[in-house]
Image (tube, rainbow, N blue to C red; front, side):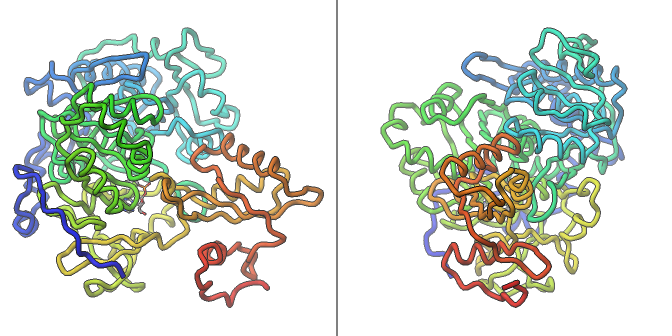
Length: 572
Ligand code: WT7
């Protein structure tokens, strides 16, 4: 087992939470709650706390959001975001959208994404962030499972919303369109925005639903993870301690709001800490990324190991031609942050990169290398104060230091999911002997730092994005040539893992590069680009249990030249 030997002690001296042990031992969530305007009351709203309150407390004219995408270059004050989202909120009310209704956002990374999300949550509706790269099947599964009433999208993305299969979807709001077809339940964004912009907000109970982020498991359809308004307490604290955000920072989180990092860490944590946010449209490009840091004088930058590896591969010459000296520190999450990346970070930016471990289901950061503490290279860091994290065995008993087991969290913490939409069984499956079981294996060292080992289940992590093998397998067998499919993740030097599909072919089909290419494109066009298998291997048969379930574990073990483990249930 790997051992913690290397440490970076260059911590940020004036960072929040210098005294970790003290912060942990004195910690009470109530102390954090006292900072919120609703303290001592039953009702609240995260939008009020993140936006309206800033306006009321004299910061209306301060910039909350900087946006550029090559064609647009814009700035939004807290007041402007308040007014725009109030207009949108009234527009939704005009469509009879009510508290608890699901309003999905299926847009490119633009300010309208935030306006719509803030507008929906402002009236107590549940916001459903979707990633723009989702294709028809992925979009349909999510809108159908959540019984979405409204989707906000563009004309370009419209073809991926199968209206005839979604009877509950009453309205499609079109951003950037001049006209809309009411016969197709459409209305333009301009029409929706033709409203009074005076401030108003619906206060809801702390446990009421705020957002649903869909994520993948190893079996079944994507899971709708519901977060409540109370998650704001957690997101605020992550912003303060783990991301060390201040009002005078300029913060850029590169994640798309379609993923939890893009909302929880990308908008809520900074705005709750009064920190202005940079949003950049468009795709990954080393020059443009460095140029963005230079242009806005970004001080805190949140990205992911895959992106760092791609920047690393693009060479030091490029980074040297930009002024990146504004950066105070860098944050990472989503996949293991290798020590080599941290060393590259020190070489390139002269500052460390701080790892954060969490999941869609946890709502916000759980374990982090805090900017105030020494980094143990390769570890994920220590728990956020107020959150009890441990390593437990298969019956939910805590284990000794340095023993490998399940990374587990004691419920409830404020950001914890409140349900899996429509699926109480899936929700209950997370819990064992009073612990939330993450699905990751890890260990804790003598100093209380946590070290990641891998996933316990079959979930694939490619470029920091979770891909459920079952979703890909189900789509693969819809291809006319594919009889059966087993999908696993295989290690990749840049992407962490890539999706690999083992398939058997239907009668009459022959293996060829063209056919494989066609199958790969089929997944990209029907499901999502990041779910596309990059490797397809054709087999005569696949290892299966006697009940016919494909044994991914066996495929994976063979792939990695590891022992296959217990194969007593295998068919042949
Ligand atoms: C899974 C959760 C970070 C929130 C966005 C991703 C993996 C996450 C780390 C890390 C190693 C990590 C885990 C986890 N993961 N952070 N710092 N080191 N692995 O949320 O899509 O729900 O994925 O990502 O396997 O279970 P998600």
